[in-house]
Image 1 (cartoon, rainbow, N blue to C red):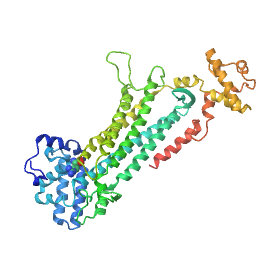
Image 2: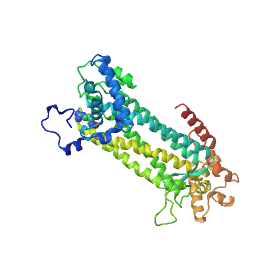
Image 3: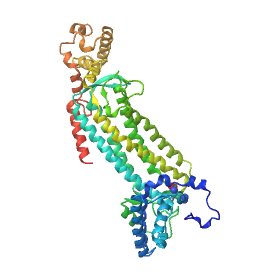
Image 4: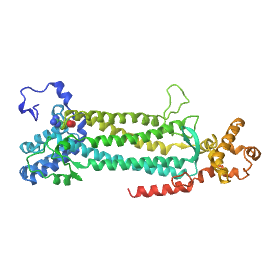
Amino acid sequence: MSKLWGGRFQKSTDKKVDDFNSSIRFDKRMYKQDITGSIAHAKMLGKQGIIAMEDSKKIVAGLLEVLSDIESGKVEFLIDAEDIHMNVEKLLTDKIGESGKRLHTGRSRNDQVALDLRMYLMDETSEISEMLKALLEGLITLAKDHTDTIMPGYTHLQKAQPITFAHHLMAYFEMIKRDLERLSDCRKRTNILPLGSGALAGTTYPLDRQFVADELGFYGVTMNSLDGVSDRDFAIELASCLSMIMMHLSRFSEELILWSSHEFSFVEMDDAYSTGSSIMPQKKNPDVAELIRGKTGRVYGDLMGLLTMMKGIPLAYNKDMQEDKEQIFDAVDTVKLCIPVFLDMIMTMTVKKDNMLKGAKGGFTNATDVADYLVKKGMPFRDAHEVVGKLVFYSISMDKNLDDLSIDEFKQFSDIIEEDVYDAISMETCVNGRTVVGGPAKETVKNAIRIAEEYITNL
Ligand code: ARG
């Protein structure tokens, strides 16, 4: 096949180079954006009198036909037409003849690919945002059921203070909410039209860039033609947002994996969301959570690949940049695969409330509250800390929890301790006394949930 750019060449491209150079394998997924962008460009060329209105109309109609041919599976893309841009142009020209050859006036594949990728990633960003919204809703639904479910909170993976499962879930709500906001922020910087940058130095044709931007729904136009074709910050920024989403899913997955172990037994994954072992009949493995944790690495890899690909290339376009697509596509695909399965996994798991409560009661999670009890009775906090330290040491030797000690045992350490200590250090008091904004107390978390619901409604 002769190349669209074949004029200055005496020999045809080596077959190996055709395969090597070609990006159609992976950039064909941008066919819709490519065609939509070309339609806007063609309309503008006609309106500006750069090509005849009649040609412009033929091109638009032809492109719509190409679109429906592709969508009905009639089209086979050609490796030697290199990429989606030249494939579409060839399909158009095969269909409408001469007029098709006028489409590329005042445009380069360099600004075209920058346009397509921005449009494609914005579409994907919207889909991912919807998925995150569903995840936020799921977290709220779960949290509502667990404002009374007491569990141990940890630092250093050592039991620290009692919290509720709702409070734990709402921590993830906050993270995912920031992820959603980051995506919408990233979208703002992506939503700028690069078309009109030409190959690197704009064009002599009187393009109306704002018209194209309006047609395609872009917020504005890029202000420097070199930057317009060389910038992939928007893809890298998206990869970074996606990495952070995966990091959050991975942390939660790690917790669920731990909690599914016999040692914790805080949750049990639904049968539909776990797998067995081919040799050990007793096994029920949290594979879904593990795979999400594992896939996080590949999204980080995509981000690193993109950053590294961009770090040493001089302005403006370089073919290195064709490598942006597989990496950002992989990051997008992976995140889109993980969010829904993660959501279903957490919505179907069984929460073992009794074990969580048992876990909260052990490990002296109410030690701070004993100290606070002493402080409320007038003891300086440092002294109280010392007394409770000794109480804990004693309790360990007796193999007891603090609330199992008799009043006489308590009094050996401080005679200001009275019967009311038991109430002051019960798990319920420990949790529900923490009414500070952002704290785990039932009413406080319920309020946080109310605010979260309002946030979702206003999205
Ligand atoms: N397939 C190319 C890419 O993805 C399109 C731009 C090609 N431009 C060029 N001057 N060869 O980057």
